[in-house]
Length: 300
Image (cartoon, rainbow, N blue to C red; front, side, top):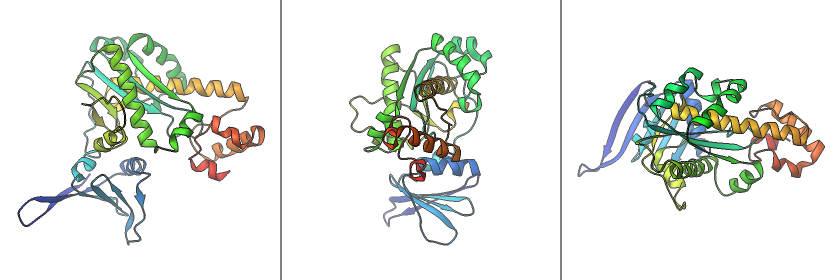
């Protein structure tokens, strides 16, 4: 990842804005696209894919994979893509949070926050707990109940009808911020005090995360924000697995209630399932099983 930095100045020497240029890999570009999905704008300029105007920073993405961050908050936004990838399983006690379901048309959004100690890590590490996205569902169903019996956790499951109601007022990242914060509030109530190492698997820049919480009565501060945190912090991995388990439990219940299979993700298979659902139950009941703002709804 190539990096170049510079600053613009007023005549009196005061910093006006910072410019940081990075060359990102394909995985990082996909993450950037998801991170700012609701703030993207086309530019019409040659060699430019799109531009993002957000929170004191303008981000320009070029066809060459170069990404330029410019503005007073450029460093904060660029920092998301400059985090080291080393494992950090030596910072106990630690707390971590993660969410699942945000990329799936069918099913709920689930957020979990966990607290783990070194002794719990030693007792559980043989289960090879990691990001639930790289564990199969059989592993998740086996390991999650063990985790829930061993470590303190808080889990929030937002069913589709509630999600669709809230989504009319808040974008997806705002919903996730509110849920992560609520999970930590509940977890703190169980363990009395969160540890210095309390990590959110990052889905928005830190300043934007707290802006989303401006109207919340209780805000948990002092968090660490890192991308791919579920592969670096044991507590975040545990949260990922428990959240995935509750997501799968809801899918099981949906299958029984509606007597049909619901594919995960948002592919053409999902489009076909949505069509079958509407043909069987009517379009108005799609609100019960799907996130209506996804493009899959328009595909119907």
